[in-house]
Image: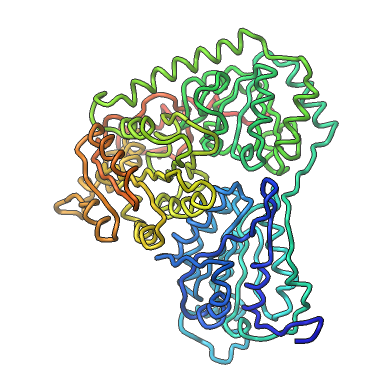
Length: 621
């Protein structure tokens, strides 16, 4: 080593660089990378593994059971830290890496930072073809890692050790950029990982990062404020970007100063507490009658920090066709959707600027009162819908039992299937930023793995709170091995397994479109001669968790108290009805593809009914 350079392998330099990166969070300097998740194999064990061994204190490496689960855990970790910290995932060349594809897609859809350091084929090609290598006869430069180009915000393959001097800062800057945030993929050929280079010492100097806040353009703010001032029935849609910007207080201040009612997206759940008088409820396909009723009547809609996906917009039928939309978003792509009046910039700065520009202007009092009356009616519905004893055992009753017994800072995690809709509609937010419903990519298997990642983050910031996972039997069977991870790493989860005998929410969609039940519920699968129930409690116990099965929501409430008192991961299994007990209100129209012709009269009738409401679909102004 000279005075100006240090000789390191590519892998050693990558890990040393990551260990030197910090971020300021609320005035406290914190390591930017919280560590990583890793499964070693061909392509990452000999070189990257050697480098990580020497940095165990700075960058703890969590051993996952499946690479897809590792990616989910890293995404949930980043979400819990409001995108201000991230974790890396390292996977072996070939199948280990391709297992991360779904995780990368989830992180991309949800705009979450995730760094993937993945093995790649030998750059020299001297040993080709090697184990776990796909050969493309006409283009030897193509490999399975190229598949990540469509699900990464930043993609690179390192072909020389010096390249990381440019690539690593570029990857980090992408992950930290509010507008471009998403996963970064770096392919690491097995031979290049071990090659050396004389790196400048300055590359490893401690660096403190800050998240950029882009101020909105004054002219855009003025135009948006003028539009809001003229509104007779204004409404605010609060998305996940409100929390990532740290703009909850500014959102609340604008609403309170103007009396404009606020509705929340799925990602924006827990922007406001349930008891705030201007929180009118969740909007959209999985929303509330209160939010959807005012959305249909609103003439000006301020959409803050949301990408306006179809579950929010009811496939663009949730709003009046002549309603004007203002898109306040740090990403111009999201701000400009559906010919919106754009305010491109940071939500915190943008909301403050709009509050100032609006001055004493306020929404008509009768409009605000109407919205609040709708909200009270919806709260009464939820109270009855979640009441234990209201019909057969249901998701809603289980949610109500947990909601009544959990702590205000406990974090709720749910994902694909029927539970995202049921949690979104029925959960009463007890505190800000405590709900993670992964519905950006609607990804089965996120629940338990994501809960593990969220718990790692929570144990760093709020160790006395619990992470509570709602999962169905379908998602549990798809990916449950991180119960074992949580036990091994002593990151306690409380997991509610609500068993409805298969993929019941898709069966519900099947039935609602005129189709017969087919291959979704175990009892309706033609290749299953005799279905039987899984003993989820016994299975969880085999992985070291405490577990029990309860017969009804009342028993679940008692079991939840035992889970809270436990010092390790606790699984509670309960059967719910596959057909009855669904939340039957609060839904907007949702576009699904249905057969235009069919031999089945029920399918033809359902298609005609669905198409009859298409006239409401917004096509722009």
